[in-house]
Every structure is written in structure tokens, then in C-alpha cells.
Length: 190
Image (tube, rainbow, N blue to C red; front, side, top):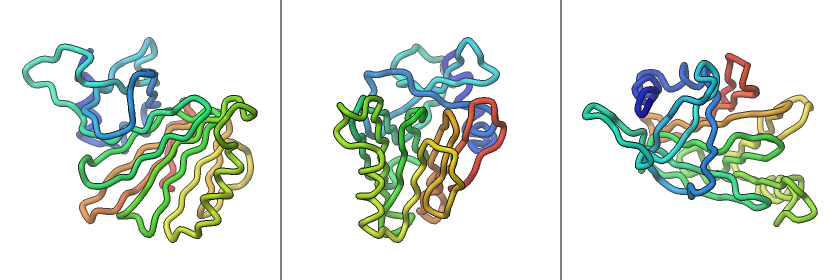
């Protein structure tokens, strides 16, 4: 159902994020600002697919979600500088990958998705990339990575799968939220 979930998301993005697991499954999507559609999957009570709004025909009252999109690049790093062109940021689901948001403050943020499915073939390993980011001593730094360690103010761990969403506040700050499992009905502000 095209636009069936967009209005629900726009009414209360955090409640939507708490309720559903957001997935990007379209490998043709590129990083940048895009109008997206949140569409049902075979399990519409749990999973929602993020796809290009242009992919489907829409009704007269349909409304896209204007968002920054950060899809994964197989065995590589996908990076995007966030501004104020869109109020939301979505990245591909994490399943061993790493997400990072960093910069001089929460108004000037770069985000990246590091995919190292096969570390020996990857551009950089996740541990190497985390070390590179931490070495820069960014005043604003949030890293989401696979593992079972205890989370800190900078690094957050997920056990199997995770979703990350960003929301631009009225003050121009970016807030990021982590949902650690598709079946989990909670999220963490990171």
C-alpha cells in the first residue's frame, strides 16, 4: 500500500520507529536526500521497507517522506554530510555493520555506514574505521556496532540486528535513535 505508512510515520516518527523495524532492501538507492515511501512487507506488523517514492503510483492525498538516505555499500563505507535539507535520516539495517555520526557538534554531522561483510575484501575493517574516527576526537561522536559489550556514551552495541534513524530538531540539532532488534518495542536515544 503506497503511502499507507507515510502518514502514520509523519504523525509520530518515534512511536513509528518503536513499533516497526525499518529496512532498506533496494540496492539501487544512493546516498543523499530523497523522497521515500514506507511500505509494508509480508510481515507488516513488524517490518517496513524504505524505498524511493518514485517507485510506485500514488493517490491524490499521498505524501512522501523527505529524508537523507544512507544505504550500505557492500564491503565499503557510505558517507553523508547532514544539513537541513530534510528532517529525517535513514540508513540500511545493521547486521554486523557499523553506523557512526560525528562532527564538531550535533548541528554539523557526518554519518557513515561501514559494511565489512567479508573483512579480508573490505575497504577497511570496522575496528580500523572506529579507531580512525575516535582518533579525531570529535566533540560529537556516536558509534553503533555489533557486539555484546556494555554501551558507553560514545559506543553502542547491538546483539544481532539494528536500525538507526536520525531526526532534525527545531533547533537544528540531529538526534539519533537505535532500535536493537526487530522484535524489540523500544529504542535508545544515542
